[in-house]
Length: 119
Image (cartoon, rainbow, N blue to C red; front, side):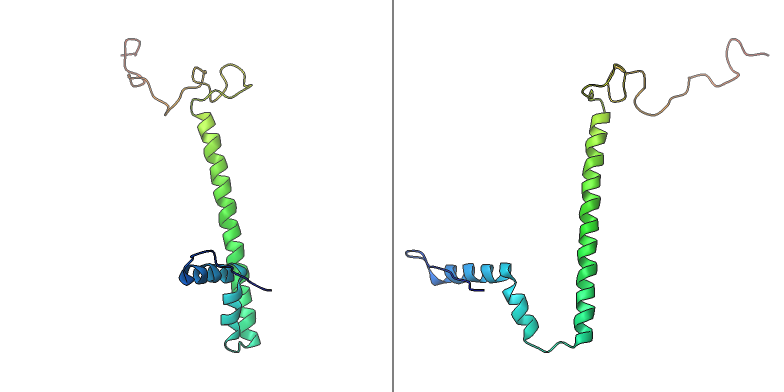
């Protein structure tokens, strides 16, 4: 693995070093050199690798949940008043459909009170 950085015309050395550091970080070279600086016992290595596996699994699950949440939000937007393409008249999601929007409301008069209540 050879990493090369060519300096451009009139480019300061600091910028070239910064680009070199970025390349090394992206290739994982700095992480490898830091891990090789000290001896790591085999048991510690196994524990570290297990932690890294668990971390990657958690990140994958979190990404999957986020994707599912985005999908649900898209579906909710379709249900809230936007007519769905190809849906029959009065289907859920249509503004003028048979189903009412919002919470169910009761009538103004309580049951048993009114003109036809038995006295």
